[in-house]
Image (cartoon, rainbow over all chains, first blue to last red; front, side):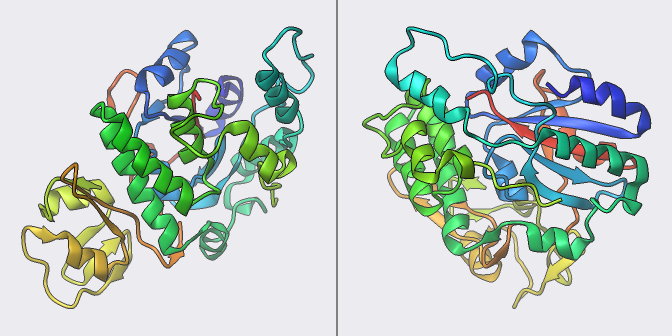
Length: 227
Length: 112
């Protein structure tokens, strides 16, 4: 998905690193291996990007300069408009899947703005208005109250137990993570997808993709870019 | 970080959390938090949890402890990027610091 932009910007000094947040490593590997990119493509089984950088949804982009300093904290990052936006919804889908696609079409993404800002930074480095000073990077990163830090610990316990095959106990910790940090979509969607591939309602979890997106409002699924 | 006991080795603690124990305290990059007493090996999870505001969750049934990230501030407490170390899709270890000297765009995505 990012290879095209990498072809353009790698000669100018940018490397792209994609990181799949996937407790199911094979699922991520299957996607990557169908079209292996030239850039590093990592798998983050424990969602450490949540604890380390404050990633709460995908896709999220983080900019890091030549000295290893973050110059933009996590924000929604799309290389191009989603093909889903213009594609007609196929006939004959189950009701819930059709409704999910209808909601997904309402989700706002800003690929043009994001990519033009990225090009500007690659060209101009710290002179780019899009490269933020350290104080602003910290300030713009998500607040982390005790509840959200505790949710991260529960998520990690859940992942550990799930990998051991203890699905019931994993679900207990993932439910706690969802309760303590309801705005974290990676915790929710990860758990839902392992219980039901289309992330519908199950006995294991309170929420579901369609229900939670409707509750949040599809238009609020991603925060607007603050460029 | 996950632990099967209430103590962890310093090496494990540093590798799993990204914090480093130094004479001036517990440090994340150049940011250091003084500790009330020198840290002895092995590290007591309950004590370090209190000093660094990192929640410690215990699952008695599974015999596991999980230490969450630092709380009370923001997700990023410094703009210095963590030295992210993760396996790539071919299971080779990749370290973010190997790209020092280049601009880097990290993209979080998922198959789900």
